[in-house]
Amino acid sequence: MTLTTDTTESLPDVLDSARQAAVAAGLPYAGGVTPTQAWALFSSGAAALVDVRSAEERKFVGHVPGSLHVAWATGTSLTRNPRFVRELEAKVGDKDAPVLLLCRSGKRSAQAAEAAAKAGFANVFNVLEGFEGEIDGRQHRGGSDGWRFHGLPWVQD
View 1: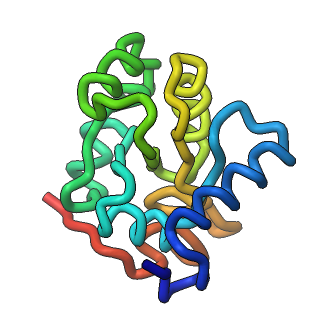
View 2: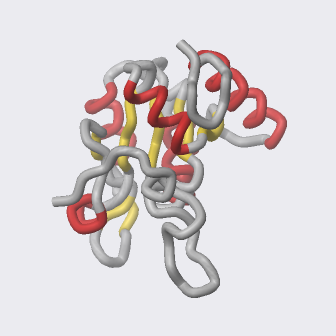
């Protein structure tokens, strides 16, 4: 299968390229993929998509239909979830399966990917840009990057 969105690489090649870039950058996890690549991997069944935002963010901001949820941090103060790795393992099962982690901007999911990799997840990837994207000069998100900016599927409660 090939991607028809932001790359012409096959799905396995996308993950291989992400791994190579991660090694070159010295990342402690398997690498990063764009939102469009993440959607192609997830929608084809090639990878699990795990939203690591809080339950409140998922409910009020929106989420990807069919994605799993394991909060990296909880509550309004975003207190680190001490059970994150155990909950991720319970939801995903296979530590060797490709897992894509998604947060608001790609920062918390990078931290979660590092923790997962340290716990033995061999193929954990960060979804770059996150669900809402980076904050801009006007203090807004979603104007230049992120899952929603790219028009990828999402729903809101």
